[in-house]
Image (tube, rainbow, N blue to C red; front, side, top):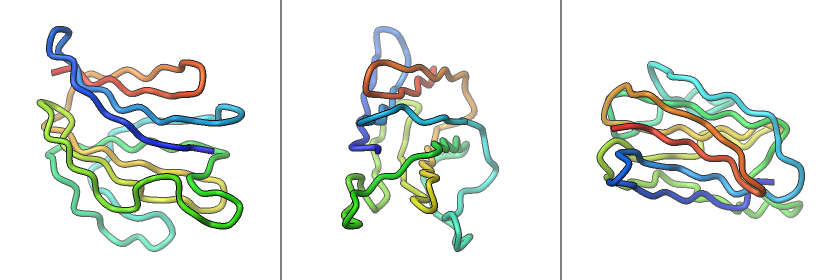
Length: 124
């Protein structure tokens, strides 16, 4: 289960970071650039700040507890770092958790794993 999302900027190293905290077994994941952002299941467009978008998909994963209470922010979160502009949970449905990330532009990125978390670093 994803239990939180955190962000930070690292000016000395010129990258911004998004961290997804995870309890229990780490799920599989994929990260890819997408042209547009939409909510899973409904296909409703998401107006995410930025000119380039990354989509993180974790499976099997969820961002809510057994009673349905969300552990993650349900609304758009703006951050305003040099590259990382905003993020939004765009899906938490049938074992797939999706998080869209709005960027200032296309950039190099890396994904890594640490105990209890998955991180995305985006260069600027």
